[in-house]
Figure 1 (cartoon, rainbow, N blue to C red):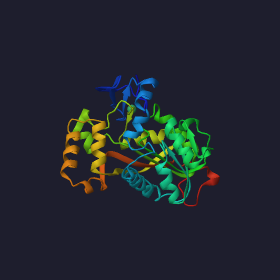
Figure 2: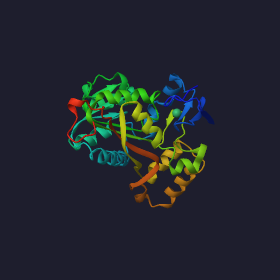
Figure 3: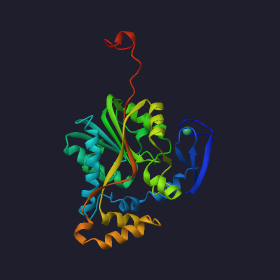
Figure 4: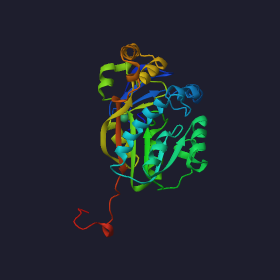
Amino acid sequence: MNCPVCGSDSLKKGAALGPGAVYTCASCAVRFISPQPSDRELRAIYGEGYYRSWGLSGTEKNAGVKAMKTATFELRLDLISRYKTSGNILDVGCATGYFMEAAEKRGFSPYGVEISGYSSAVARARFGAGKVHAGVLEDCPFGEGFFDAIAMSDLLEHVRDPLRTLSAARRLLKEDGVLMIMTPDTDSLTSRIMGSRWTHYKPEHLFYFNRSSLSLLAKTSGFEAVRFEAAKKSMNLEYLRTQFAAYPHWLLSPAASLAAGLVPRGLRSRNFGLTMGEMTAILRPARRPSRPDRAEPGSKG
Ligand SMILES: [Zn+2]
């Protein structure tokens, strides 16, 4: 077996996860599950209940969950807005379209790609069938160079072939476009502390990056990574308690439950910023080597 990112055969087998185990590449540091769960196993994980547990079913009774999700998406849009403030924006893994809604309010023309039939139907009803592709990025109908910005939050760790996904994003992006990725960071504090019990280790998370392995993936797919940050998410105690009830963790589930119990009801739904072992990366199309007739004055050629 070879590393799916750099091709090295120097792989270290770690903890069992899902049907396989987590491997770490000694050369580029990417971690990945092998063998990957089957399509059938992944479909069983991504049922409607999956989106409901993340507060992304689009039919939340609790308006607080939508407000919290939107607050997180606003943080991602703040970052994107350093580079692009208008134009066509694509949310890959758009679920029911909360990010698209927030982007539209800022003046972007929002598009989405969503693999879940249920969620994509909700988003299509909201934005129009032509704006939301039900499927994956690689077979979406949008034109080459159509997008000013592409967002991938909680997406890259789920795909079977990240190189293929980023290459598709590269084709869809304008030459001066921007790709924002948010994904777990294997160099984060929570990863270092929790080790093989890291909360991001889940059978549906097939790949795990750090800044250097993501930079390498970016380079291989025609991008350059221009910025990394620890990713904040907007959270509240009520949501954390629900999450850790759905995804039990030996330490954090009782901690979230205890904290929620100690705090007055009104404060449980108050949002605060939290870094949970994830990073955001800004990728831009790599500049092609300039030809002599196009060299800018003063450039080194
Ligand atoms: Zn590697």
